[in-house]
Amino acid sequence: MKTTAMKRVAGGAFALVMALVMGGCTPKNVTYIQDFNENMVIESARQQTMRVQPGDKLSIIVHSKNPDLASLFNLPVVTSSTNQMGLTSGTGTQQRNYAASTGISAYTVSPQGNIDFPVLGQLHIAGMTRNEVSAFIKGELIGRDHLKDPTVTVEFLNNGISVLGEVRQPGRYDMNRDNINLLEAIALAGDLTIQGKRENVKVIREEGNGQVRIYELDLTQGSKLMESPAYYLKQNDVIYVEPTNIRKRETTVNGNSALSTGFWISAASLLTSIAVLVVNLVK
Image (cartoon, rainbow, N blue to C red; front, side, top):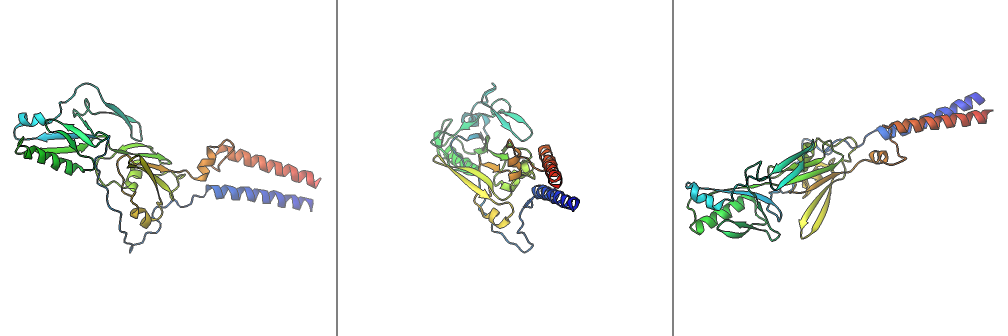
């Protein structure tokens, strides 16, 4: 009877430990867009066309049939190594030099939303898209009788998004086109790790006037995800993927997960203690 009782207690303890192990190992909600079906129609949020904001750096180049005349409206190309900026793109840090490495001088938009353009002077361009800036400058050049046939090319030089937390390659990534959405940004970062929460990915956005807004998006619910105003990203958005509770416990002093060596040491110690206790009770 004593032997049978001892086996039952030890077996129950082992079953309890294994239940904890399996419960900790089983990932939940790792599938994206779980509400999808073939008849599903989602009205996505309005796409976000990048607009000029204070602090943006822009490349603005004026072309004309008369290159010498057009050169009056372009910044001189600086050859010294100035205005260098390090950007982390998942696998490491790349140095971007707006003057030397690209051969393009940049306009920096002032806090008031202006740039100081050659000959034309102060131009207010905050809130405009690239096409609108191009059309505005072209109109000024023609309207003031400076050029008859200008072509104006506008590009953003420092726009990017940051992806942090439980992704495979956290870092800052360039936005080389308009209308990048959250799923594309996550793909750039190598996807979420198995320990990243899919249900409340955060998008941190500067709304202007010193205000910051935090959006929470559920990657498992496609309809709500794509309807969110944060689904399409804006320049300088920060995406943060929160770790699961298992990952959080791994970073604590005493917390161990079923994937760590510490967990198995603790489990073995617990089983040994239970076995000793049972033996003492049987004696």
